[in-house]
Length: 244
Image 1 (tube, rainbow, N blue to C red):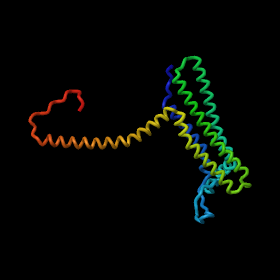
Image 2 (cartoon, helix red, strand yellow; image 1 turned 90 degrees about the horizontal axis):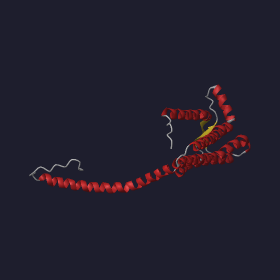
Image 3 (cartoon, rainbow, N blue to C red; image 1 turned 45 degrees about the vertical axis):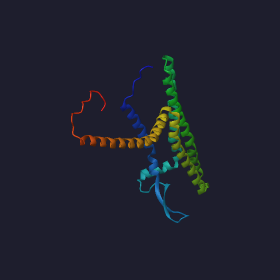
Image 4 (cartoon, rainbow, N blue to C red; image 1 turned 120 degrees about the vertical axis):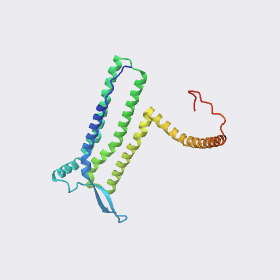
């Protein structure tokens, strides 16, 4: 209902830069921790490469000690940075948004369309947060179990836990766009329209290309017949504004 100030592009880019740089900074220890190793497969006897959680000995001594410290506390770092921080940030933003929306509803009468858009957006964010929490919780539980009970667990159990982590990671990545299309109606409708246009465009393009080829052939034949004859009088001029 009332005009709101539009956020400048520089402000949005600055916020995105802080988010991306902060995320990459938090994930730097993972890059230094994992490395590629080679081992002979017990089944096929072929030398294969695999990723192992072991710091490289080529790192500087100070960095190597920090990576070892990170390896010992990795499950808590992973739990705090990749689970607690996103959940707390999303919940706090939702509380602030509801408080601001409640204060604006008291001062002014807002349109129903705008309130519906805000409710859809809030439902989308809450749905994404729930999916993220449900898919990340087993991974954190597995990391804590492996960190404290790995000496007493067999290799098959550890491989099973890693497989479960990969499954939930795949599930989270595949459900997220589907959830966005289902909860965000304009985006889902635009996606369906695009798919329908692509399906109908193939058949319509084929039919239009055949029709255009026939019309082009007829035009060329008529023009050749016309220009083979001598012109007796100039063609009449087209009126201004008529279609060609």
